[in-house]
Length: 183
Image (cartoon, rainbow, N blue to C red; front, top):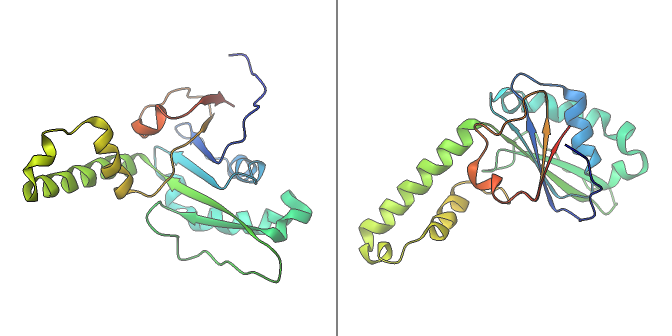
Protein backbone atom coordinates (compact mmCIF):
# COMPACT_ATOMS: atom_id res chain seq x y z
CA UNK A 1 0.00 0.00 0.00
CA UNK A 2 1.33 3.43 -0.94
CA UNK A 3 1.12 6.19 1.63
CA UNK A 4 -0.47 9.49 0.73
CA UNK A 5 -0.43 12.76 2.63
CA UNK A 6 -3.51 13.41 4.74
CA UNK A 7 -5.00 16.79 3.91
CA UNK A 8 -8.12 16.58 6.06
CA UNK A 9 -8.63 17.81 9.61
CA UNK A 10 -10.07 14.95 11.64
CA UNK A 11 -12.08 15.20 14.84
CA UNK A 12 -12.18 11.49 15.69
CA UNK A 13 -9.40 9.00 15.19
CA UNK A 14 -9.69 5.24 15.68
CA UNK A 15 -6.61 3.19 16.52
CA UNK A 16 -6.87 -0.57 16.03
CA UNK A 17 -4.29 -2.83 17.60
CA UNK A 18 -3.42 -6.13 15.90
CA UNK A 19 -3.85 -9.35 17.87
CA UNK A 20 -1.19 -9.70 20.55
CA UNK A 21 0.43 -6.31 19.87
CA UNK A 22 0.48 -4.21 23.06
CA UNK A 23 3.20 -1.60 22.78
CA UNK A 24 2.49 1.13 25.34
CA UNK A 25 5.00 3.49 23.72
CA UNK A 26 3.23 3.17 20.35
CA UNK A 27 -0.15 3.75 21.98
CA UNK A 28 1.04 6.88 23.76
CA UNK A 29 2.61 8.19 20.55
CA UNK A 30 -0.71 7.70 18.77
CA UNK A 31 -2.59 9.53 21.54
CA UNK A 32 -0.18 12.47 21.68
CA UNK A 33 0.42 12.53 17.94
CA UNK A 34 -3.20 13.46 17.41
CA UNK A 35 -3.39 16.00 20.25
CA UNK A 36 -5.58 18.33 18.18
CA UNK A 37 -8.16 15.57 17.66
CA UNK A 38 -10.77 15.54 20.41
CA UNK A 39 -11.72 11.85 20.27
CA UNK A 40 -9.36 8.89 19.99
CA UNK A 41 -10.53 5.35 20.49
CA UNK A 42 -8.21 2.42 20.90
CA UNK A 43 -9.68 -0.90 19.80
CA UNK A 44 -8.00 -4.09 20.92
CA UNK A 45 -9.94 -7.26 20.14
CA UNK A 46 -8.46 -9.14 23.10
CA UNK A 47 -9.51 -6.53 25.67
CA UNK A 48 -6.00 -6.44 27.17
CA UNK A 49 -5.62 -2.68 26.79
CA UNK A 50 -9.07 -1.97 28.19
CA UNK A 51 -8.41 -4.14 31.25
CA UNK A 52 -5.12 -2.26 31.80
CA UNK A 53 -6.59 1.20 31.22
CA UNK A 54 -5.56 2.43 34.65
CA UNK A 55 -1.89 1.71 33.92
CA UNK A 56 -2.12 3.30 30.45
CA UNK A 57 -3.74 6.40 31.97
CA UNK A 58 -0.95 6.75 34.54
CA UNK A 59 1.74 6.32 31.87
CA UNK A 60 0.00 8.86 29.63
CA UNK A 61 0.04 11.48 32.37
CA UNK A 62 3.62 10.70 33.41
CA UNK A 63 4.90 11.10 29.86
CA UNK A 64 2.66 13.98 28.78
CA UNK A 65 5.29 16.67 29.41
CA UNK A 66 8.03 14.88 27.50
CA UNK A 67 5.78 14.31 24.47
CA UNK A 68 3.96 17.63 24.31
CA UNK A 69 6.33 20.02 26.12
CA UNK A 70 4.69 23.50 26.19
CA UNK A 71 1.27 22.23 25.11
CA UNK A 72 1.15 19.68 27.96
CA UNK A 73 -0.43 22.06 30.47
CA UNK A 74 -3.29 22.88 28.11
CA UNK A 75 -4.28 19.27 27.42
CA UNK A 76 -6.49 16.98 29.49
CA UNK A 77 -6.55 13.29 28.64
CA UNK A 78 -9.86 11.67 29.59
CA UNK A 79 -10.11 7.88 29.41
CA UNK A 80 -13.53 6.27 28.99
CA UNK A 81 -15.20 3.07 27.85
CA UNK A 82 -17.84 5.02 25.93
CA UNK A 83 -20.35 4.80 28.75
CA UNK A 84 -18.86 6.99 31.50
CA UNK A 85 -15.41 8.46 32.11
CA UNK A 86 -13.21 6.15 34.14
CA UNK A 87 -12.91 6.94 37.84
CA UNK A 88 -9.16 7.48 37.68
CA UNK A 89 -9.50 10.55 35.46
CA UNK A 90 -8.48 13.74 37.17
CA UNK A 91 -8.98 17.03 35.37
CA UNK A 92 -7.38 20.08 36.94
CA UNK A 93 -7.54 23.51 35.42
CA UNK A 94 -4.73 25.58 36.86
CA UNK A 95 -5.64 28.89 35.32
CA UNK A 96 -4.87 27.75 31.77
CA UNK A 97 -7.22 27.13 28.91
CA UNK A 98 -7.44 23.36 28.58
CA UNK A 99 -8.37 21.11 25.69
CA UNK A 100 -9.78 17.63 26.21
CA UNK A 101 -8.68 14.52 24.34
CA UNK A 102 -11.22 11.79 25.01
CA UNK A 103 -9.62 8.35 24.77
CA UNK A 104 -12.07 5.46 24.47
CA UNK A 105 -10.78 1.98 25.26
CA UNK A 106 -12.79 -0.59 23.30
CA UNK A 107 -12.70 -4.34 22.80
CA UNK A 108 -14.59 -6.95 20.79
CA UNK A 109 -17.14 -7.26 23.59
CA UNK A 110 -18.19 -3.63 23.20
CA UNK A 111 -19.50 -4.30 19.70
CA UNK A 112 -21.47 -7.37 20.78
CA UNK A 113 -22.92 -5.70 23.84
CA UNK A 114 -23.84 -2.62 21.86
CA UNK A 115 -25.83 -4.62 19.29
CA UNK A 116 -27.62 -6.60 22.02
CA UNK A 117 -28.56 -3.42 23.93
CA UNK A 118 -29.76 -1.74 20.75
CA UNK A 119 -31.88 -4.78 19.81
CA UNK A 120 -33.42 -4.88 23.31
CA UNK A 121 -34.28 -1.18 23.10
CA UNK A 122 -35.88 -1.69 19.69
CA UNK A 123 -37.93 -4.65 20.94
CA UNK A 124 -39.09 -2.65 23.95
CA UNK A 125 -40.12 0.29 21.74
CA UNK A 126 -41.84 -2.04 19.25
CA UNK A 127 -43.79 -3.69 22.07
CA UNK A 128 -45.05 -0.27 23.19
CA UNK A 129 -45.62 1.04 19.66
CA UNK A 130 -45.81 -1.71 16.96
CA UNK A 131 -46.28 0.90 14.21
CA UNK A 132 -42.60 1.89 14.30
CA UNK A 133 -41.67 -1.38 12.57
CA UNK A 134 -43.71 -0.58 9.44
CA UNK A 135 -41.23 2.00 8.15
CA UNK A 136 -38.12 0.80 9.95
CA UNK A 137 -34.83 0.78 8.02
CA UNK A 138 -31.18 0.15 8.84
CA UNK A 139 -30.63 3.88 9.32
CA UNK A 140 -33.20 3.82 12.14
CA UNK A 141 -31.27 1.09 13.96
CA UNK A 142 -28.20 3.35 13.98
CA UNK A 143 -29.90 5.65 16.48
CA UNK A 144 -30.42 2.67 18.79
CA UNK A 145 -26.75 1.70 18.47
CA UNK A 146 -25.68 5.27 19.25
CA UNK A 147 -27.84 5.21 22.38
CA UNK A 148 -26.08 2.10 23.72
CA UNK A 149 -22.49 3.41 23.48
CA UNK A 150 -21.60 7.09 23.31
CA UNK A 151 -18.54 7.00 21.06
CA UNK A 152 -18.43 9.27 17.99
CA UNK A 153 -18.15 7.79 14.51
CA UNK A 154 -14.51 7.58 13.40
CA UNK A 155 -13.12 9.54 10.50
CA UNK A 156 -9.66 8.00 10.33
CA UNK A 157 -8.66 4.44 11.14
CA UNK A 158 -5.06 3.59 11.94
CA UNK A 159 -4.10 -0.09 12.15
CA UNK A 160 -1.01 -1.05 14.15
CA UNK A 161 0.61 -4.47 14.16
CA UNK A 162 1.34 -7.33 11.82
CA UNK A 163 -2.28 -8.40 11.41
CA UNK A 164 -3.92 -6.39 8.65
CA UNK A 165 -7.52 -7.48 9.26
CA UNK A 166 -10.64 -5.91 10.69
CA UNK A 167 -12.03 -9.07 12.30
CA UNK A 168 -14.01 -8.22 15.41
CA UNK A 169 -13.85 -4.49 14.72
CA UNK A 170 -17.08 -2.57 15.32
CA UNK A 171 -18.84 -3.06 11.94
CA UNK A 172 -20.66 0.28 11.86
CA UNK A 173 -17.33 2.07 12.28
CA UNK A 174 -15.74 0.36 9.26
CA UNK A 175 -18.19 1.91 6.83
CA UNK A 176 -17.60 5.38 8.23
CA UNK A 177 -13.80 5.47 8.20
CA UNK A 178 -12.45 7.49 5.30
CA UNK A 179 -8.88 6.24 5.43
CA UNK A 180 -7.35 3.05 6.67
CA UNK A 181 -3.65 3.39 7.37
CA UNK A 182 -1.46 0.39 8.21
CA UNK A 183 1.45 1.31 10.41
